[in-house]
Image 1 (spheres, rainbow, N blue to C red):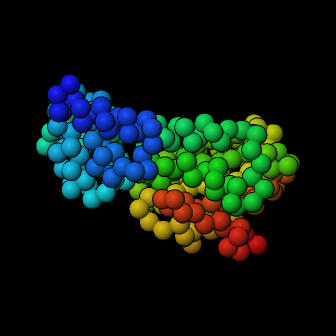
Image 2: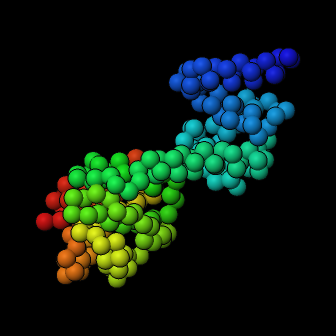
Length: 224
């Protein structure tokens, strides 16, 4: 085993035995790139990526095109890096399937945050629940630009009725912004709540997400 292969073997064993807790950020990328670059010095490329995007989250949040602009990063490596957060998102969503009870904003936040993990556009979800606030369905309603998303009230009512929901919860994100409801967010939410009430469905909350932070309109007193 040559020195290059020996280093790869040691890094793999270190991960298998101890996980990533003892790894520096460049070691994490170096290990990942082993599987896209079997005969390259991935340490150098890992450092280039961190220098280009500023941090490990910055690397994982970058688009494949942006990743491939870094010297030494080809399509295979870019796809592999981009796959990590997307796979993590699918993993966390799969762990929060129907049947969970969203009895408070903390539970709602835990349930919803993974759905916005890699979103670069403003996206809205509707969670349909039974009378005990157990999740019946969670559906993406719409996807907009980085600053706005269209709200189709009729679609919300139709989805709630199709799921025989007693209550619903809305959620949308502010990519790159703050998890603070705008004046427009509040007005739209109150309009949706009024229409839903006419068909016997309660709007329990509207969660606004930004990164790993979220704000509950109900907890903030915006849904009197």
